[in-house]
Image 1 (cartoon, one colour):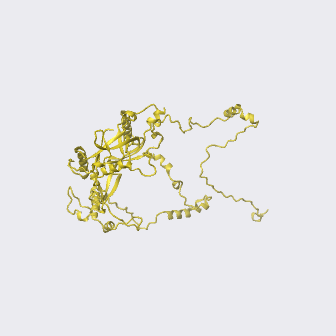
Image 2: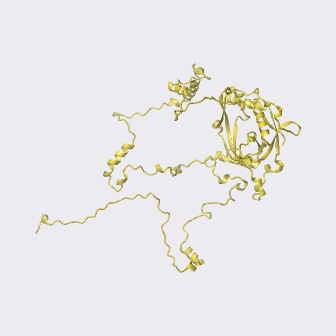
Image 3: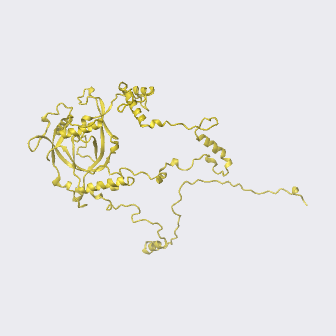
Length: 474
């Protein structure tokens, strides 16, 4: 009997198995592949109604869809679309806030997936001991390097909470004025009316004396203008509106029409239904601002008027320019009114309606302003003696588009014709005269000026610096 050591070696056949994982980042197909067994019996059979019925019975539709397949194209249900109001088929002016559950769907591609520490050439390895050293090294390289500290508790960096104190914030604001005008810096004790500013650093003083562009060091400032309110050009409300036409309001296309500088927009009184609808939208926004955007400014319609020629426009500009030495010349008027007085005649162009309107937040009245640079030292005749960049607050921005309800009614699309578009309410022309401000207008401007300057009471002892446009009978 042979011992185990004397047995001959037996050869065993072994196969090398290498498992390779292939990544498939594409989503699975929406449905499984289905092959239909259709008998081929001739073209006549396929063209017969019986074949379609048989195919319909054997292969029922496995999807649920509405009659419009999720794409409504019927404009009948859109409110106001046939009256020229396209707001129901346009994106909202103020996009609604993103729901927290939808933020993950809007992440960029670079943030999707897990961070890969291992190399792409060893993705088939399943046991962790082969890649643990590489993973640890990659994580160590990706982590921010920190200087090793001695054994002991790690101290958190202290935060100076005094910087958020309202008094400290006020001192920091006063510091900026002290840097600009060190001769007017207040150095006494804090009182109800005066407060000392923070001590400016040498770097801050150097940055003010030698300003540099943050990204382009080769640029140098040409001049400096302080930003001031233009109290001489104040209006009854103390603010301005910006209007933009969706289409060219005149027939001039090859050059700029100077008549637009003195164009006049006369608002049309809104009817009760429009006012009620606007207040309903305001109430809905106040109750649920997440789902109901702010409707903006009131949907007011306007009648647009322009002078007949460029001569009338030029003379009207001179009449309105208080810096022009000839602005009081009576010969600037180009027409005569019904009672024989000198006037400017402005002809009716067409009716415009408010397309999109954005009203500024009353709590942030100076969020958007218009700037105008005035420098009386350059030889120009300006009534503003202080060289400054004067700002004008913008309270509302509106987009004006031609009013089309009347044209649609004539075509038979809608049977509703607004009274404001009726020919009997149309003003063919306006006779405009330019006069000084009256007592009521002076009082309104003085009240707003006192409020802006922080004074008590308004008074009506201001001077009429600008002309006021008054409408005559059309």
